[in-house]
Image (cartoon, rainbow, N blue to C red; front, side, top):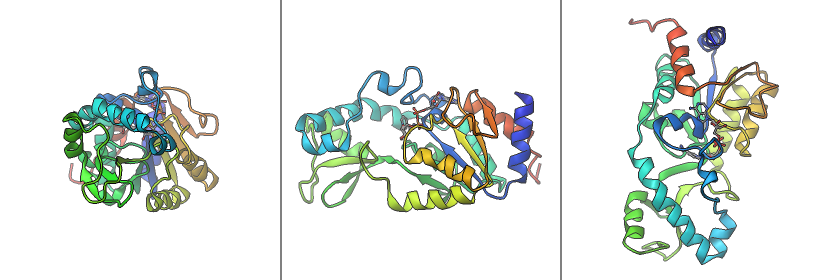
Amino acid sequence: MDKQITQLAQWAARSTSLVAFTGAGISTESGLPDFRGPGGIWSRRRPVVLSDFLASADARREYWRFYLDFFPDFTRVRPNPAHLALAELDRRGRLAAVITQNIDRLHHAAGHAPEKVIELHGRIDRTVCLSCAQDYPTDQIIRRVEAGESVPVCDHCGGWLKPATVSFGQDLPREALSRAVRLSAAADVFLTVGSSLTVHPAAALPGLALQNGARLVIINATDTPYDDAAHLVIHDSAGTVLSAMIQALDPPPSA
Ligand code: NAD
């Protein structure tokens, strides 16, 4: 792996528009399960799609039971060495942006400026009314669910509340998606970390970067559909690889 890390560090050092694209796998070392990896969430629960949430009271109850089970994990986790390595790359002026599919806010906690992180699938710490868009802290709403309100509704208009995360069948936030498209098309290095690269439309971004001349680097524990097209594929843990990449970069000017 040493040669691959050296190659990655060289590309990162010379890049003028490196974009990191992250998925649930970057957060497993923080203790959050991914969806499709071994032991992933989908091995235990089926996702509730948006059309079911809108059409069925049972689906809405099931959806909130899911959040009741998983939300506490999200409140406890801290950034791991992979998040911290990307934040260090940013501090050294070598990162144009992080496009993330994650909802866990761990890139923000690692220290990036908010405008550097594009959240394609929303954020778990906020909850919104599907009717009037009033927004609430999710922990406040979870307390209401714990107290017996199985499907919480908006205090202002009585509409259904749903965490500000993108469900299957739900549109991605328009501005985030268009920024992600622009940055991917302009990237000279596109570094995917901990993503199965199977969830669309997000998974089209590595292809867009490739078409526009980027070097595609994939760091993932398991195979992805882009492995054959990528310039560099490292099948190892995100924390190990990204920490080693930082070590292999030249030291920062003040060191
Ligand atoms: P995914 O579950 O489809 O794929 C995760 C990939 O990461 C897998 O291929 C797995 O082999 C790999 N992986 C797991 N641990 C790793 C590690 N330590 N180092 C390197 N690779 C590792 O995830 P996805 O591609 O992000 O797509 C699924 C959806 O899951 C996204 O929409 C995202 O919103 C949602 N999700 C987010 C979180 C989170 O915010 N932390 C958690 C679960 C799911």
